Image (cartoon, rainbow over all chains, first blue to last red; front, side, top):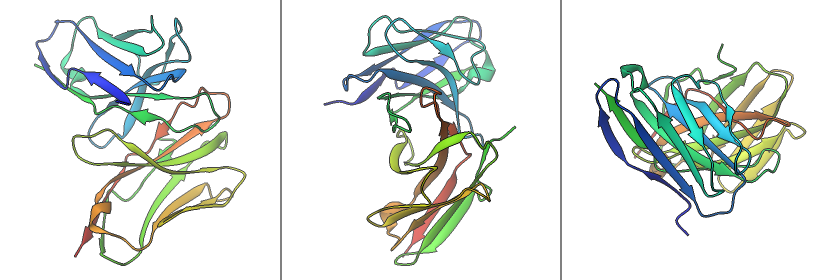
Length: 113
Length: 113
């Protein structure tokens, strides 16, 4: 049982480049989330999904797109990276229980120069 | 607008003593409150949670207290151990919000020998 895995672990991009972060979970969870963590700001929700084929915006969605084509995978895309998107990105998943705990992946550290 | 606040960025406690981490919130629609622990270069891991209909929840060395009238919760760790040294995040979710979490900015706990 790997839990939540994220690929890649580290990445450096130049401004304007694009990339996709992959999140996979093997717990058969319905809900999946993408957060970013910046110094002094805690974790902020970018996008989330309540099931295969569905996505919704979180608190800071601008500059990102997501897709959930399979229940176990949640992809986060940056079409044209900006230095403001330098951050640590965390994926999480959970069951649809009220107050249900979320299980987090190990994170992807992204630097945009 | 920070809906979940952790006003102490850091806390140092001696091994064996009690650690008390505090969290305040402004949104009265929050239904569940969770504490996460995060080590460097890892994703957050769930520690303990409490529903808004309770005022206390205990799990081993960890106890969370909720004061709804004051919109305040606290995490007590007794006794504190060196392995508890980490960043602790308070988080909250509302009913019917797909368990989306709003995080505080975190408190770094250092347990000294």
